[in-house]
Image (cartoon, rainbow over all chains, first blue to last red; front, side):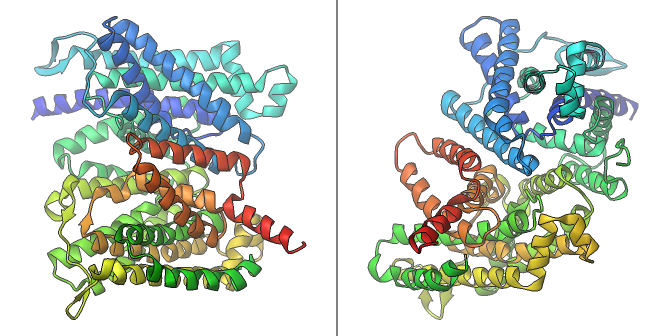
Length: 289
Length: 318
């Protein structure tokens, strides 16, 4: 039993780390632009496929693939912001319209990867091989690295948005567009940067995920739903709340898989989310706005 | 809009009733049947999305519930398909009631997230309960519609054509009656000025629940019909493909109208089928639909119907 518990905790840590990285990207775009980016999962897929092309198809190694995947997703993010989000800034129904345009972007990327790379399964190599044993439970070194990378990335993201001038300009643009413009912040640049940052993060997460799962054009759709559950539970407002909710969901999922099995886990997660929303419509850690 | 509904639309119905007299090809008739089905889906979705301004992105759930209700009822439980199809409307409305309870209290983006997550959950349930639903393979060889000894698939799908057209007509009459009723007007009031509508005593919570349930009825019926007609129930009913196609109909037809999505469904089904015939376009056609959605949102937010209205008004001297 204790061994199963340790395995569950480890699995919860890995899941929580991945969810935190996915959901924090969503949160960055939401807090800065007020846009929910439905293409976030597809950007993960894109990052993973580009990384595969560089690292496996061209044989340039995983590190190069990782950089290329991250950059490709960031670039796609800039294009999405430029073409699909920016034209609607002044629209009264911006929230709904951008849900639909980013949904369209998701379809384009998903079907695009299928057309370009074909339906055959691919897989990325792991960062490092081998396994670690923690209190008698095995965890692959790759997954252990994810558990380390996630907090580092999140802290870096937090430090950037809270401590640097450029990062703070993102938050300023998110809180009050007009005031931000008045003190000399180029708001469209800030928006573009936020999108690039979030998309790059998605691409990077996609690369990490591509070594655990097989690459398919729908690689990102299930994680997107998980990231949604996380942001619903945590509220979209702050990075800390998002990361906290990600680990809550990760542990809960690992625990449910252990107790009720794989089949009923998604339903129970959803039920939890609904119960939380009924009592706290702004999320578990959300303020009372 | 009024002029359109009074003069042109009965004419459209007469033309559609007469189509089988001229079109004997069973594939073309099949396209009409599918288009009628999508028209029901899209126009009912527009009741919640466009008319009410409720950010419902789980509309395909109701369709999927309808598909599987008819499939399980007709095949597993041996219910007559004629009963299984309306039963689909009932279960879809019940599933809408289930999701409406939390959704009624939420705001903005959280409505999108919860309704979308709900559709993904139902999809997961269908995939995991494979002993009931057939899992990823779906259910095949469902019973088909027959009247006495007459199978509806005969005479080049003549029977199915009229059943589908009948379903679309009923659904459209239902929707137009609904939106022109006092209830329908209160929906518009909430969409256009929520605070004012609330001050006038409109209960937004009750409205949202009613709209979700009402929009699910014919969506479920369409799902049941689809399963019985194709004799297949597959998880794709809840997939992104079906959803994006239907959403593009709502957008291209014109958000906040009943007839726009119906017209767009007819155009888009024939257009996408034309693309599907070109080699290498089976997947790429969805990219074209997505691009069309974006272009409509950027260039013609009113959709096809707004363009049509502008044209008819200018030719009639207004």
